[in-house]
Image 1 (cartoon, rainbow, N blue to C red):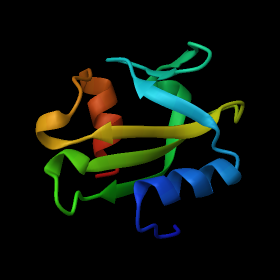
Image 2 (image 1 turned 180 degrees about the vertical axis):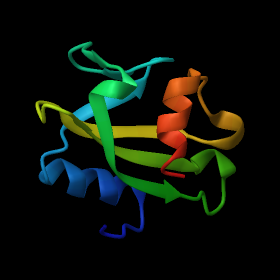
Image 3 (image 1 turned 120 degrees about the horizontal axis):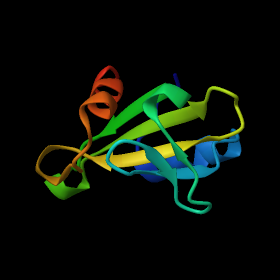
Image 4 (image 1 turned 90 degrees about the vertical axis):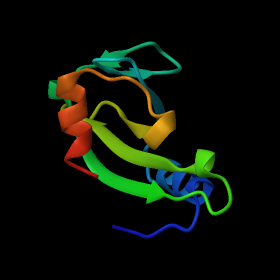
Amino acid sequence: MQAYDTLTEALSSLKQQGYTTDFNLAFDKVKCAETGVCLSPSQFEITGYYRFEGQTDPGDSAALYVIESHDSAMKGTLVSAYGAYSDAVDDEMLRKLSVHH
């Protein structure tokens, strides 16, 4: 797994590698921001994980998940805050995401 110094650098590089879908957490699914297509935890794999620490602002701390659907039709990234700024997710999604922490 390649190392990145910043979240912006990671997102740019991954986009060039074909990870073009922008996913967001939607409680029990990940949702494509552009199309509205949702994937449940059983429909995708997390193929990479990066953690970024805010150097001066804890609000800048984020986790970057690299996601591929099982049928490889969708490849993209999910940026999620962690700690006090994290989103609420259901138990199955939390287990899937926690494996990569």
